Length: 270
Length: 89
Image (cartoon, rainbow over all chains, first blue to last red):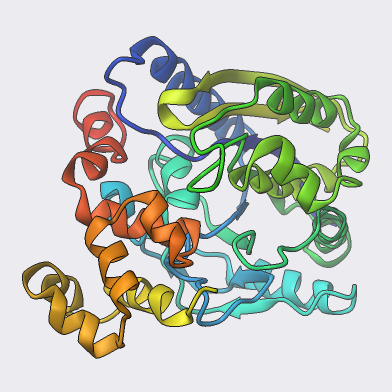
């Protein structure tokens, strides 16, 4: 039985700090703090749960969930992120796909996946040395309909079973969810941020009440947190690996100039 | 009603070598190749949210086109200033 040694979540965008320097600094410091905690847990594998911004999963082929099973990953390079390789974790990724299959989730597998900013940006601060093998788990929030919050939470349960039931003893696994918080992108209310929604989400998850949050419909999340707010389903998957576990907010900044509520949390170590 | 082709064109900008350059240098030839309607051509030339939404471009793909069409937006949504001054790698 492997061990979940760290569960964290963070927004995954940065925009120009000009005019919002203090808030940008707070965000960067927050993501770096999350990185310190992840690295201190000495994980052998880092599962990174994110949406893809249609550089890999677009309308041409629309799997609800996709697991990267490759041996290494080179970022797509959007946002001018350096295209430097990171190691993958094929054995863990395959185990996750197999466990998901017997748990009612026929997830897609990807040998060729170029992480966009959703994964690559936070990792520049969480694993700047690019040494921790990653398993990308993509949630396709951009398809219609997107995977429901309840399905995502249930998939988190399969991820937990993979770790605790299928993986070698002594393997140390960290979970990183990225995306959110509220943002309305190129839909009515474009540019709005809802601090109310953001705090509701973060407080539910750090209060060990992610299962309650998972009862929201996708439409309710879009209404309250925008189409980009749907990325909180990634956080729900992470939280479902340690149900009931409490945690803390590492940083929060509502930044309308970036069209995004920016936040990060860490759940308590086991 | 959205036509898939307007989204397909944007998706292919990062997949098909040379397409982005052709869109910038000779947009009409690209619009012809994809069979865009007059309204769709106008929306692509405008490259703004309301115009692109009016012809059914997916919100995320709207952002793709805006980023390649608007250097100021590309500069804003970039980690360049962070890599240079904030120590991000």
